[in-house]
Length: 239
Image 1 (cartoon, rainbow, N blue to C red):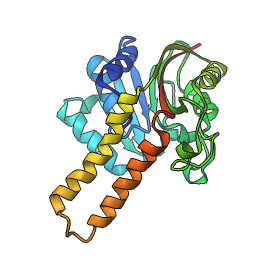
Image 2: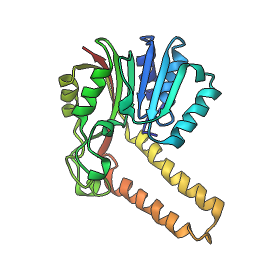
Image 3: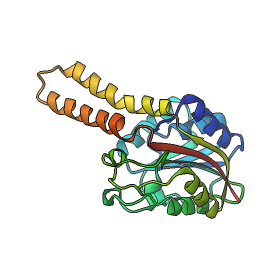
């Protein structure tokens, strides 16, 4: 659910698992894929994930059971702000909006509020994997148009790292998704549209709408934010 290669995911999981954390939280966990991988890599750890998407939580629970992890993880369909510390390790990937203004308001992403809340969850020495959107290069009009329509929606990586330090963290590893990772991620949309059209055929009453949506997504990425919108993955230690 994010532009993230298997190799980079392994490094992020390893950063948390190597500390053998007793408790691991996943804020806005979705399918809880990274949380489950941390628990698999650290057999003494227990996890808790929260997300407002009930369908995603159902899938996460099914995956936990399939992998034999259901007794070590609690996955709840609730506001992630209800996760209360302390936790030894926390995952927060693309979920800063939990502590900021509603997405519908199209306001700048409130990294500071998110980082402050995450710092409050972990003790000194606690580990956090924080993944969030950034501008990889100065935004263009074409890039911001299919997003929130504003050039201050995201920060650049240097500014984000300053916010990290101000919140009481030190970065141990700094990653940024490659264009190849973004291409794989965005191709997932195209694949879903293609599969739908293959299954339902050109005469289905929704076929034209699906083609329109596919074209809109393709244009937003390839004619818009490709190479401009980035994704930072930060391995942080609370200090």
